[in-house]
Each structure stands twice: as structure tokens, then as C-alpha cells.
Length: 592
Image (cartoon, rainbow, N blue to C red; front, side):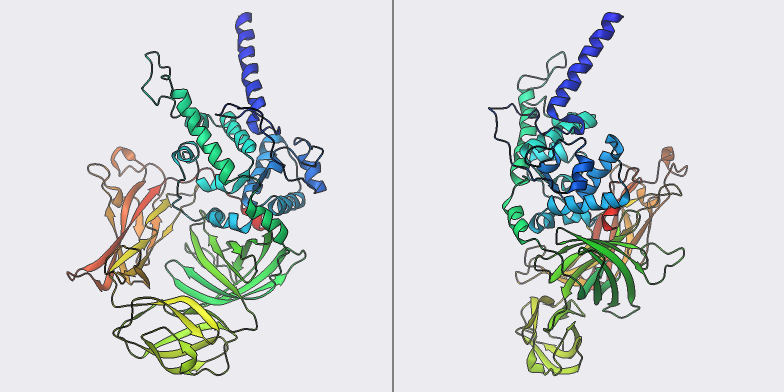
């Protein structure tokens, strides 16, 4: 028995020694093993980013050793978004005993997100993570698919930039923390000819597994390295956010349409803190939205904030626009425009896509009140929304492109111009710019003759069952019409989006197995395209008392638009209704 205990102790010590050499378990060491790759000579270490903040050094330097250049191990060799650093700070608190006061955590987060953050060009492709969008991610290679995508979105990795060595340390940490990661890294171990009779991998299998991990590490070290031209340029260009003032806002809310209005940004106590007030009016008419809030700007461009409606509604319906919203926006480096998403809901499933333009002294155009005009139609009234528009406007001042004639100016103010236009029967199909003096609104509207097909967005949707314990996750769908374009073919690159289509909604069975009955149990789809999931838990009405999960088609049928055979146009979205999320990967504190 004593010999057995000694043997077990020896094995465990060897295992932990190997992990310690590789930096596994989140260790602070800068060096380490090369994961799936064998070292081919000693590589020259990449230069880190020195930490100059005393609080960061005091709190983080207890575990992360500081070198003679001011680099803290691990920290100086990585850059990320506010959400990425917030998650890392939480992990240090949860696993490694770090203690922070809220004010200290905010200071550290601000410093790391700005001085060890991303350049605007690096952050924009992964903004969907901060915006909580469901995104179909492009997979760069099979190695990345195998090693990263089995457990999480690629965006979780791609919102970080690290040295090649630090990427290796991260994979070692995954092996130490998550057994399934080790399985993913070695998934190809049996490639190349099957397994031996005793279950051992065939010859060449280990090399295949190492190749898969090496491919991923090479890709990450090259494409998401620490030092990049974009980061070098942004360090020189970065400046304090001077965004106080008035901004025009264009917002799209799925199921509700387009809104326009004005956002007022007021400077807060610090140069990167602000308060906001906004009023949005639906372009199609209806009640205005009024909200107030606050926000922070990280790294000179990355807005994180939150806002509330003027009056909270008790027992509000799902998707209620007075709900508290979180805001994630990307501010252009010249600080004249911004775009992003304001979102709410237990799973951040509701949201509005927003675009902002700074109000200056010059005339600026924001939007038209309609996305498309029918070829050959006459006397169409269109409303052009903007700021500082000219005091006098005549038809000759407005241009809508060839084939569209401005007949008269119905009315005009400093913020809108209403014009009456005729569209020639021979007008070219496609998107048009609108020009007023020197102000240009690119792609303002489309010219078409009829809707040729409709798409239901999102085309792949997700909803979650819920109960008193776990909240439901809803899904808002909308139907968008498309024109065939100049080539006359459907679903080609020149097809033109013409805007929302009036439809009726229904569900159809997605037959995955014989006798599938998901449609009867997953939930309900109302006339506005809002899907409400059923309760979570075993259902005695289902065979084997299964839960109410399943997959269905959400079908939109056009009220007026028909195909060439005279049948109403239809579009479908594949809707998956699944169980609640029991672990939340979310960083709401970045907006506080």
C-alpha cells in the first residue's frame, strides 16, 4: 500500500511539473512548453507591453512577475476588448484569490482595455461579441474548427491578440482546466490508418494531432499576434474621446421598423465618461422613444453604456422598448460617426441596430422615410431626414438619380424635406444615392418593380425554454423583400433589398425524425413575428415525457406579393428551441 501511494504521488508530481513548465492552470510564467509543437531551437522572445499603472502593478504583480522592462508576465503579452479583460479579472478573483474594490476593478479595466486593448480595425470584426449578435462565423481553417469551435464561438478567441508563446500557454491552461479541450486537441490522434488492437493510436496519429494544434497556434500567432501594424498606428493616433454634443441617430428594431432622432452626449466626471439623452421617432409614425443613460469610452473609440426609458412599465411585455438597454458601439477614429447595437432581454435577444452621425454646422442627411420606390409610380411623397438643412430648397437642389424626377418640394425645415417625385417606367433597378447640395446619402433607397422573393431574418434563429427558475429566451423574426436585380436571376449578388414586407406568420414541422411533433410543443408565433417559447421541464403530454425542445420552420407568407404562378411569396427561418443557458458568459459591468 505504501509503495502504491508513493507511485501515485510520483505520477501526480510529474503531471503537475509538466503543466507548470507549460504555464498550465493559468500560471503567471511567461515561458513554457510549446503545446503541440516541438521546439526547434530557442526562439527570440517577442517584446511585451510594459505596465505603467501603479494599481495594476500592485494588484496583479503579486502573481504576475515584473521584469526589468516593466512587463508583467502574461498581462504584457496579451491585448483584448473590455469584455475580454473583464472576464480575465473575474477569473483571477474566482480562482486565484484576487481581491478588488469596485472602484479598483473599474480603474484596472479602463487601463487594460485602453493600453492593452485593440485598435479600431482589430475590434470591428469581432464587435458582434460585445453586441451579443448571433453570427455565422467564417472558419479560417480546419485546425481552428477542431481546437476552438467545439466549445465556444471563434469570437471568444479572436477578441484577443497574444504572442505566439502566450497562445501556447493558453492552450496548456485549457488542458489543465477542461478535459474536453485535451480531447479536442488530440481529436485526430487516430487519423492515418486506424487504431492498434490494444486501443493505442495508429502510427502517425500523434503527429496528426500535433499538426492540428500547431496549425491553430501558427494561425493565431500570425493573424492575432501581439504586435501588429494596426496597433502600432493606433497607439500613435489614440486620443481622448471628444464626443460631447448632438448626434443624429438612425435605428432599426426588428419587428417594429426604422426610427430616427437625436442623441445628446454630455461630458461626465472623467474624460472617458458621459451621460446621454435620446429621443427616437418611428419613421412610419407612432409614439416616440425617450431614454436617458450613461457610458464609457475605452481606447478612444469603444463605447459601452446603458440607458432606461422615461417611464418603466410594470409587468412589461417581452421586447418592451422602455426596458433597460445595454449599449455597445464602435466610434469611428475621426469621431464623426458610430455604429453598434443597443440590446436587452435575459439573453440579450432584443435589440436595435444604431448608426450615429455627429451634428455639425454643415447640412447632413440621415435617411429617407422609405427604403424603396416602385418603377413607374407617380406623385410619390418622400421625406428626407437630416440636420442643418438649407432654409430654401427647390426641386433642382435635390437629386435622386437617373429616372427619378423631383416634381415639387412639399415642405421643408432644418431637419426634414418632403418632396414629391415621379419614377420613370424605364428607371434602372437598384440602390440610389440622394444628394442635397453638397450633402450625400449613399444607397438611400432602391428602385424596383415587384418583390421577387422574401427572406425571414434571422434565417437561423434560436430560442430558449424557460420557467420561474430560468428565464425564457424569445426570438423576434421579420420578413424582408428582395428584387431580382438587373441580371433577372434570384439569389445572386445584384439582388436588391427593398425593405419589410407585410406577411402572416405560421410554424411548420421540421422533420428530423419519423413522427416529429415539435411544432405542437415548442411555443407560439404571433402575428408580429415574435416567438414565445414554452415552459422548460418534462412534459407528460409528449412521448417519453420529453422536454419541449425541438426545431421548426418559422414561415412568413406575403399578404400581397406573389410569385410568377400567382402564389403568395413565402420565406422560412430555421428555428431551434432549446434548453435554458445554465452558465452565462457575459460581462455587463463594462458599461458601468
